[in-house]
Length: 114
Length: 115
Image 1 (cartoon, rainbow over the protein chains, first blue to last red):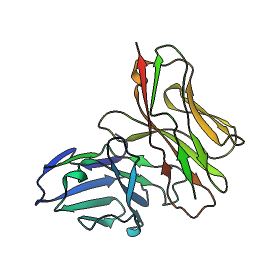
Image 2: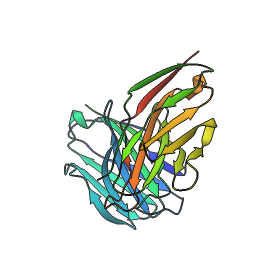
Image 3: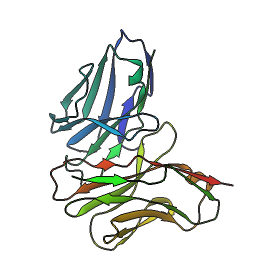
Image 4: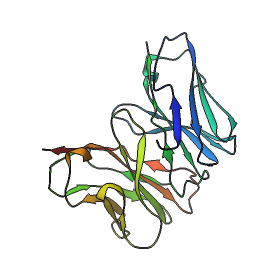
């Protein structure tokens, strides 16, 4: 679709589970992002990677752990989440972290924590 | 610091009527401005952007936006709304010369086009 693919599309997990979200882009972009989107709230930037190096971590709890093994792949590892972590998690990429050309978003992973 | 405001949570318009979704911004320098659209359970899709040049920017699906520097606004417009335009719309800004590295998004405006 957009060039940014997120899997799975839906995820239901218990508070004691460990799961991972995956994001993949084949646009040749050098920066990748994780956003959290909750109902009635602005988009929350979680992490930014530029050329596989984390350049921003917006005070995200340690139960969220990002991993960027190469410029095409980004993971979000989840561990002992809380019900309030239920949200749509969006991955995006851009040519560089300055985002002058804008971002390309994936379709998101709808996460439900039970 | 950079910020963007979408003053309306919800906009309703009848099909065939013109629509406007409002956005105002604040930057210390010059802005990059963007509009994105989000359909249910999907990611944000790029509509249009203003970087420099003509103040009237044309984008996808017949949408356009006008950059107004004096009013620090970048309102999204379409001459004739379609029911299929119903979605959540986000404005975003980045200060070209600012220290923030990423886009700042507004809180979104839910557009409903009534048949």
